Image (tube, each protein chain N blue to C red):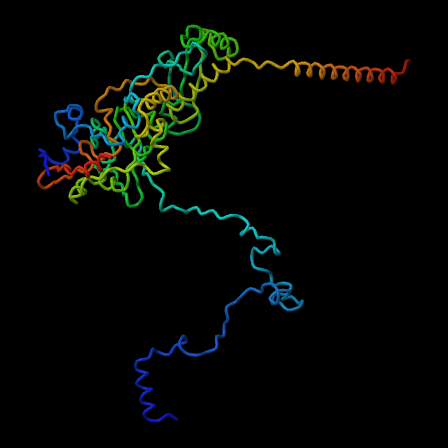
Length: 200
Length: 289
């Protein structure tokens, strides 16, 4: 059996495999081991880097849900309510604001919709504000605030459903019937009142 | 009256026979096994006689519903402890504890922090024989976790993965079978046994879904899908995904590997400070498969 000599103690052997040893082919015994289940064999067509940068989806054809975090202004403050030392010391409340008119990631339709429907959330400067102090964790509150922003945008971009001609006709008929009934009762009431008055 | 010879024979026998007891003599059994009065001739009054308070107040057994299938028989049983001896456990390590370990130099953040590193810190003990299959990372301290680390745990929730990646690190969830765990938990003790490094087994059927899923950063998942999910998670939790360079933060073991730099089948000789490789082609092929 061929023996390979190792200098140094075992601990070093186990925990000092720096990336240089793994990447160069010089020390063959330290090169990356590949079994039959290595990832390049399981996924032959894949780019094997799991930290590769993925291109951000575009918001041109409608809102994809992507929000560039750089363009948001996130500020932190202390939450209200009970909670003792935790609520007094930690900045768990999150304010997320962005300028609606100049947001590059929003389609124009969404901007118009937000300015109209969610006027009350928009400041005089034109900044949409979303607050969250839902959880005890700052990071979960950021997630909640972003979720809320995405909800607002999708809500505003939602087109109302068009009613079918049959249902329009049905509603017209029912409305007419209700009006007829209402007027009939009104006439009856008025006649009864006239009948019950005494002409002095 | 027996003859003298007969008496002596009897006495001789008595010395060797077992002691007289109720189970080796003929005696009437005064307490027959109690049986419930059932149908036919055990039916009608069911042993209660006719009328009287005894017949009327001898209530049926608890749960009896006049013959209707009783509730305690009608409802199916649920065994809360069924298979408990087969369930895998993952003792927790919080992000707060991990940050503390990194700050106080109990673990080396320059290399992958895996099961062995956590056990070697001396702060956590894993007992594979008690069905403990590794560590799970909990979210306590997720707001204060700031060090970029290369982590390998056995289970982590979504918010924990987000916390690690937000800090600029990477996390992988990996499975180790019993033999591999015993080697990992105390490598020095394992090498002293003089046994070749085992080949790590693949996860069992109920765990394959978890470890092949990119959203849980499974070690058997497609790396491209993992990269895509990193962006999705960053979008969900509202942080800019930091760029991670290929290097100490991205090194990973092969799915069959237990120790970095050591292959399955190799034999580590601590006394002579040697590592012995496999030469036999059949064995070599087995360890590489």
